[in-house]
Image (cartoon, rainbow, N blue to C red; front, side, top):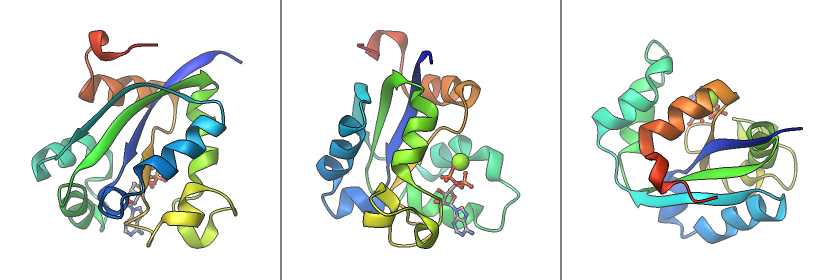
Length: 140
Ligand code: ADP
Ligand code: MG
């Protein structure tokens, strides 16, 4: 399998509860390397552009408010099959359905406040990484 990069976000419910290190330990234990990282506070408009794919969903407004509510950590994870590996470590969107040991099973508060974002395909990963990072900031 090829070396890939994927965008990861540690969401406000997790930064608020000081869980950044515990979550990143799971990614690193799975063999993913953090090759770019920054802590930012998104505006609602910036969150809205990031999640534009969901703009017609009933939870869109609530999702954008949540993502802009407190700081997030945006980061790029690199490794073999990084896109799917990250999704495996994250667990299902709804923490009630997430496998034991996953980030969302252990830390998520609800289907909305579910601690982490991860790109869903290599194509979306490329777009999402470019939204937050310049090439110079990716240090593999
Ligand atoms: P994922 O983050 O697992 O890729 P989606 O792309 O389907 O999930 O949804 C994006 C984000 O929108 C979710 O991580 C979650 O924060 C929020 N979300 C999804 N479904 C719901 C829902 N039914 N109610 C509230 N928030 C939701
Ligand atoms: Mg998604």
